[in-house]
Length: 241
Image 1 (cartoon, rainbow, N blue to C red):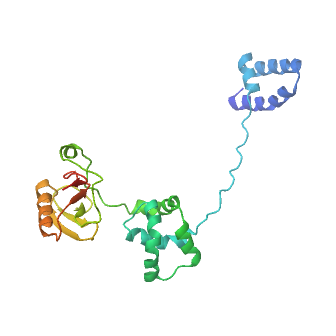
Image 2 (tube, rainbow, N blue to C red):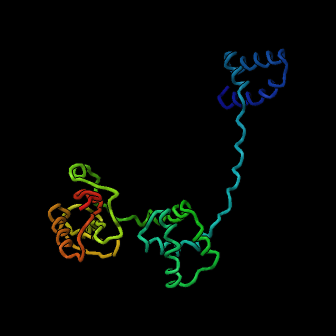
């Protein structure tokens, strides 16, 4: 008897076996072992094994809460304009950017506007996932490091941000799609209180070139440089001058 035939025979006698008394089960078991050539213990396991029930059909999920096809266009423009932030940052930015969007592209339906203002950060990430995959952000030229941070004194919680002179600084690589080779970096320093911003360019991001441009900017500021905060491994983060 082939495998398929033994399986069909098992299915045919299993229900009758479970509904029989002890004496009838012995007869069915003996017949099953004789026909299929199984030992008794294996045959008993087969007869007592529960049949797999058919999987219950999946219940339909909740209906979409948002009309994604109508929300994607304003979301796309606001997302790109605000520099492609994550869902949490975008949720905070939408109330600020929405009036500017409507000024340039026309007023939105009240329902769409309310949806944009009430949508969660997780839903924003889900809606923008295809767009995020097709438009990745630029490369990062900042590398983590602790050597200089351990050598340069760092003071925290001493900034008086009501006075000018406490600046944030960062560098941006103008390298296209690859960080290989030599290219120009831009250095930007912005005063927290006044918003005074100075920009300089440097060839590559060597310590000497960046420090030289920082000193040039410092000499031209209309106020003394009191604090300097950056995420560059060439400089200490948040040190007090």
